[in-house]
Length: 311
Length: 237
Image (tube, chains in turn yellow, cyan):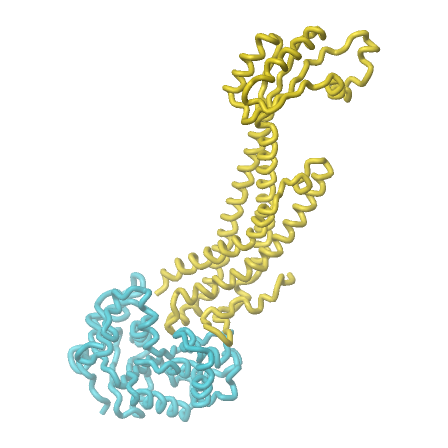
């Protein structure tokens, strides 16, 4: 397996202040597949994090868009009565406080909504138009609270008894809930991957400790401290994690951008629709740094803990 | 160091590995600064175990040990390195770090003590030259003969000018000339104030250092625990 970077200098400086470096523990014993394991972990973490962020952004964006939206439907089969009630409802709501705007959806738009399924010219062909409910799209100044809906209902129902009033956010609540669940799943995945990374580092550090036990004992007997020994492992794993993390992030970015392109083709892309904003990209860039810090901390604690059992 | 000048004091020390019988029993003795001690005894008498207690590789199963005025039994782990840096050790099996050169092996005690790299080269080259290894400075232990490895181990033990030098059969793998030369090095360090403890079963070696004091181990016990060993041990006659 070709190495990601020149790991020949991994363990240098465990005991050093400056100048010439020496590896008190053979570097090959700490290397092996560790950078690749970390690369995979970081890639998966970054992808999971990007998915979580994208879902979060999508939910926030959609919520902001429909939060203050209320739909008033006039469900009346007779067209003339439906039209009259719709007009009265619009008039009743116009003077209400808390309403930013409202619009009676034109019949052409309603016809266009059902056109993909039923085609055009239904009235001409059957002699009767399909009684699609009249729709009034209401924008509130704030979110559609139950109190707001009750106030609208109180004002509209006397004028339009066939009206049905719904907050738009109610329709999409199950979708939002599912998206939030997915977001939590992504967060859980990130946490699990972080734990898996720590576990992998722990095992690697223990294995390296075992392989270098004699050397460590010599260093101890020459007056070396636990911190000096731990620093060697910490730096080694730091180089592994930094190299592996960089490659992992690069892989993740390829995957994320590729997915973004595909989603943008659907008109709901991760990137093109602004699902990932600059702070999200910054957060993704921090993943390998956090992974490196986590790996170094895990290695340090593992080594220090193990050394406490040595004299 | 205590007021009466002792450097090491063992009080009724015993050592057992796991549940076996004690390999060292009832050791009570005092080592004084600037003395040259030989530790003798047959194979299996416990010389190496006693040395391991002396260079803090092992805690005893019972008893009390004071080293440089400090209770070595209750000493927290964090303070052990500072105490160990005052002790130079020549291991019986050399215990050189295999992937380091002769230079780096010898420089190791100075590096762990935090010496600057620029201050290392001179002393390390000097000591390697003194033990006759100036031309093997970059050699790895695997490429050195047994005698050369032993000389590197000795150079590593003395490079940091320890207060006490502990050597386990230090001349076992060198020719008589080099053995003599090494003993002269130990004597020189001793004259400069280093307490030297050399474990050996080579009686000729004992005679090469007339000022030396003898500690004899027999089946884990000092053979004269109530006499000379409580005080400066008897001189070789």
